[in-house]
Length: 113
Ligand SMILES: [Zn+2]
Image (cartoon, helix red, strand yellow):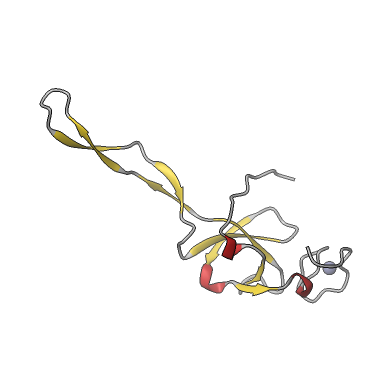
């Protein structure tokens, strides 16, 4: 299985979710879509001594407060970007820890985690 870096997700995004488009499968939030952000900062021109605006090279910034989140189905390793508003929190007891399906009874694990 492919190893992927997991982002530290916000406290409110921890736990399990269902969402439309992922019928009956539990999801976890694994991160946030990234955007390339170029920031500007003020520097002093070494020749004229004037203040000038300089653009940084830019960096990938994860937007944890945005409208989109990256989710992964329990037991899967692919990320999907979906609207945060589509997330419905569910309890650990609501889905199967074996296959990730909500309402399945084949759960080989029991109890809360
Ligand atoms: Zn199952």
